[in-house]
Amino acid sequence: MRPTCAIAALVFLAGAGIEVRALDLSGDLSLQARGYPESPAHPGQRSSTAGWVLEPTLHGELSHTTSFTFTPLYRFDSADSRRTHADLREAYLLRYGEWGENSWQLRAGVDRVFWGVAEVHNLVDIVNQIDLVEHPRDRPKLGQPMLHLAVSGDWGLAETFVLPYHRRQTFPGRSGRLRAGRLIEDDAAYESGAEERHVDVAFRYSHAVGVLDIALSAFSGTSREPRFVVDPGVGDAGAMDAPLLPFYEQIRQFGLEAQLTTEPVLYKLEAIRRHGAQNLLGEGEDYGAFIVGVERTLYTLFDSPYDLTLLGEWLYDERGSRATSAWQNDVYLTGFLSFNDVQGTELIVGLLADLRYNTRTLNLEFKRRLAGSWSMRLETFANLGSDRKDLTYDGRRDSFAGAELIFSF
Image 1 (cartoon, rainbow, N blue to C red):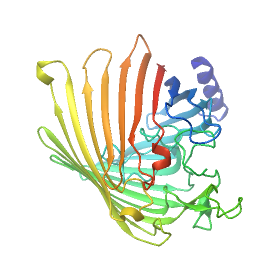
Image 2: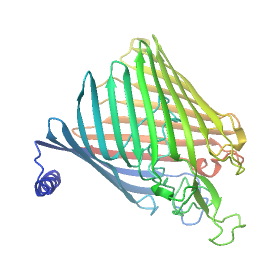
Image 3: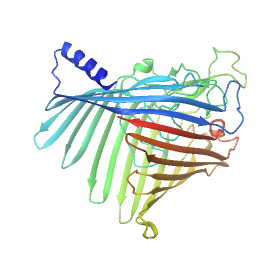
Image 4: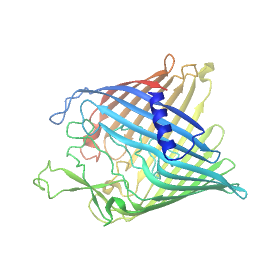
């Protein structure tokens, strides 16, 4: 597979009159399976699923100041047709250079950007759309078309984004597990008359001052988090099982990220102020939300080679029960046990508890490299309690155990 992709890329670039100085192919091929102990809540759902994911990355150097990156993804799922999908995670041209005493980078194409310092959820992270059918915890991102200019110097890093196309959030299909009680349609509605072609803009400034890392961000455009309305054009709009239509509003968001690194504790903060959104009642409501966290690592635990990292985070949305987000008033507690061995063995235990509703979820994860390029991942999501009043009730009541075998090349 590697020679075929490399030859195809070389032929394409040669036909375009572009000389490639170096070409490298890497990526992962993973085989995955899940089992669900609870009986299906909806017709057509299965008690187990299997599939595979291919995500290669082709990187080429065109000159000492220009490169390109190409990362497609394809997933096959045996049960959910919506989870079987392809996406272009990255496909961008990168140019970089010096501007006086400053450095600059310009990316044009499709890319993924990460903002935030928290572990369980990132309020400020708004450039890319979440690929929700991939995984409920890892927050994988859909590729986002963008023009991304970054300028850095001793004064910090300033980034400007022009985002000419909106990606819709993905949702499980009719036969998919972890789905909502009502089916969410593939289609979507927009507040903007330009719909998904509305041009969004974002800006972020970040800087490190001693032990403090801080970032300020601003976004104006189409929200990545939809609210849901009953589609009057599909069936009986008043029926309890009527499908829901995602509706994307025009919003403005201002964000703050901060991380204070002391010995031996890390203090974390993410906060946003959002304007233009509507609450769960369909009323316009500007609001604020924040995440605060504390992280501490215990090295050579009990004189062993193991390191244990303990983390606690509190997520709060001032709208309370009117919030359209699942993160209204939640606490996340987790421990990362690193074995510090050649295989890179890690054990993760996490508990997510909703302080407003009686909802509790336990997450166990075990990762280890096997022989050669092979590695494995085992995980369990156990539903310890679900409250029917909770916005996430329908999705959280599906516990599952999963296994993944990964070949890296």
